[in-house]
Length: 493
Image 1 (tube, one colour):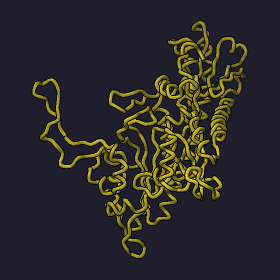
Image 2 (cartoon, rainbow, N blue to C red):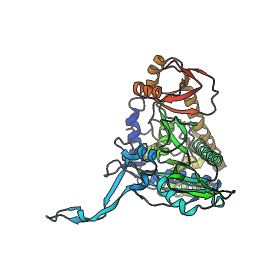
Image 3 (cartoon, helix red, strand yellow):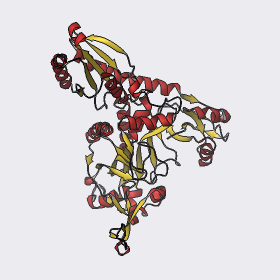
Image 4 (cartoon, rainbow, N blue to C red):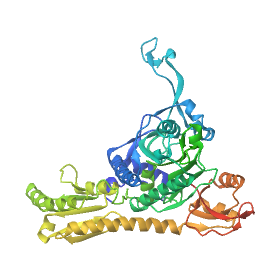
């Protein structure tokens, strides 16, 4: 990496500091002047937009339609579902007044005490309540079901300790909400959407995930089951990267959403909700990036290929421009996003370092000597390997190289993840090893008491009962009681 940008803290020295520096210096986001909030900068938002496009298409392929619901929720709505309000009460931001006025000294504004709302409003921490209050007007018969909607929006959860993308008071997300005629249909939908998330994480983000179901303590407030995808970051910690909830009839009953079934009898609708947020940006950064900056999978990189000319005078630049033009056209024809940076505002070394920091997957460099030889220098960001290739057929080569980079990034992350999954039977051994990170498959007796003890003594939590793990009876390493399944335990973000 060029000396101009050699300023990132190394991951091995301080992983948290490395992450915070990288988010800011790679122009992804920065702290806002509003406590706990962030400004997502254009380069960071371009990645989020790509995520949105892919996920939105995947949702619609399953029959989901987009809608939009109010930001403000009457406080009384939250109290209708007791478990739900209890789960979010400590995070709610409350609107109490609707007007300001100039104070007596005319040097500022104060809340107008005469403009107090009759009912206080909650800035949405999630939208189950207001959406199900709306659903009661839309659902009357089994013929109205299933009802499948999603909204892209912001939410507010008043976090005390924040970190860009991973945990902020305001964040962007999508939240899907569905209503069904039967329990089986709702459960199938919740599991279907989890698979959509897992497929997106692995095929587009190149992030391997463990799918599973949350313990009762860790499930979403108001849900009967919460399904999750858990990803491992490079420091061995888990990051919950998406959840899908089977809500049963809880919200149907709370908001009187009934329909006439095929037997012409009234029945409460069955519900799901599911969401991913800008936390995925944090997962993308912490899974792949290195001490030189971002490493972005080509599928989500705003710029997939950058081309930097090397020249001494305008005549040489004109020659390089002419040689590059058909290459850019070919790459664009393949659907590849290309930036030809022939601006005379920075030295080539600075450009190299900047695009490396921003994780551009492929860099092409072409100068006068390359033109004479009919070659171009190619560098791949994932391995930092450079090679000289013939200009002839370079677009096709780059297209295939991007596919190889996508696969290699996933393979590297999966190998790291798999090498840091351990079975553990001894609690004392677990308490020591979990400090260094990793996913631990341990028998659990199923009690909240054991779960709480693990969390208190190790700062690790039960992430899920994982799918795809052969389950056999055993003995809980903490309590010594019988266990019917292994759970995934890890420290987490």
